[in-house]
Amino acid sequence: MIGLATSIDAFVSGSMLFFMKEPIGVSALIIGVVTFINSCISFNICRIFKKMPTGYLEILSGLILIGLGCKILIEHTCLK
Image (cartoon, rainbow, N blue to C red; front, side, top):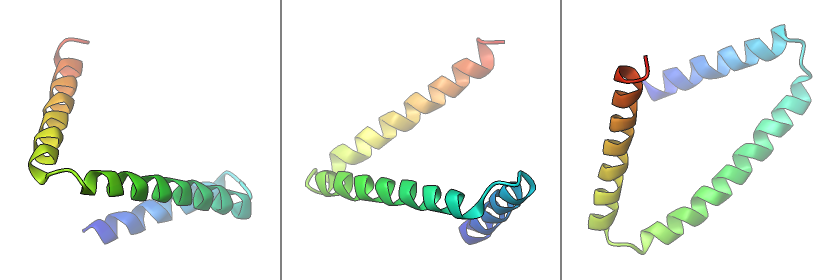
């Protein structure tokens, strides 16, 4: 399913570049550079988190998900 979603996303992105008459080479270079930088940052962050006990990371990720859920709930109920 993720592969299918990625293929659809790439198709739509490429189609938009074509229809907006953007230079494909420059756009591909920018996308590649940003992807490379994000990959390097993520790799280094992963090396830091790898040293932490998994229990703390599970609690932290759970708290982040709860926070995101509360944010969405507040946005959908209180801000109308």
